[in-house]
Amino acid sequence: MKTALALSLLLFTSSALAAVIGKDVSYKAGDTVMKGFLAYDDAVKAKRAGVLVVPEWWGANDYARKRARMLAREGYVALVVDMYGNGQTTDNPKEAGELSGNVNKNPALRLARFQAGEKFLAQQPNVKQGELAALGYCFGGGVVLNMARAGEPLKAVITYHGVLATDTPAKPGDIKAKLAIFHGEADPIVPAAQLEAFKTEMANAKVDYMLVTYPGAKHAFTNREADSYAAEYGLPVKYDRAADTDSWTRTLEFLRATLNND
Image 1 (spheres, helix red, strand yellow):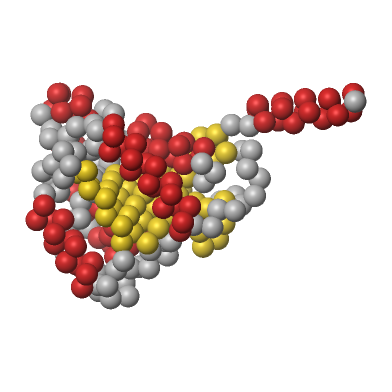
Image 2: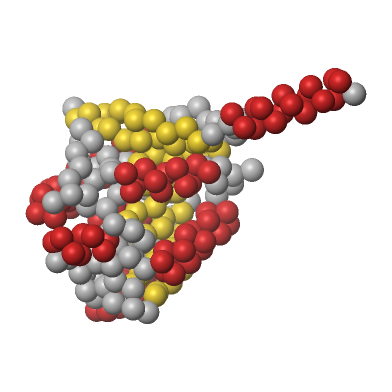
């Protein structure tokens, strides 16, 4: 009886001590030091699927870290990808536009910086080989979608209020990943014409994808800070609790269907 009680207490204590670990990490893309954020549940001892989180144009900030922690609580190993170098972040839209613009106008740089994060995550000892996905928000949504177009070895690519336009549309066979697109119908940054062009691109490339649109939802609908950005800077963004909740629920279902995380 005492032995059983002691064992029960030990198991309870171990469970209580187990927690999501979040830590700053550094890796390199060429000569540039990249500073990301790695999150995982230390109670999970088996190798798990990895998920790359590419942030909004603000950089690898607290919001992106929050999403990584949420993924870790679901049993994934998540890495917030630094797309700017040296962990640069900003809360100024002018600076954010310059930082994201410098990346977007240089596709080779964009690919190299994404691949550096991809390689770093794949090399973690608790990550299953060949079981990677990527999530992207706004600017990051455009990044991960372009990585899918480039044929990166990802099993799933998910975008939230992400830019859908491209100068290099996918051709049949280019995209290997399963795609999920979450889009706000009232998003002036990604207007209806851009969405229709994306649908045409996917049809021409013969890509099977999931598209979920939210009536009335604006840009940045998953970010609770969107309303403060709108008030301070006059940006056409707004948080939408229903769209945020639904898109996250569908995200977890999509990841479970596409990644082997057993």
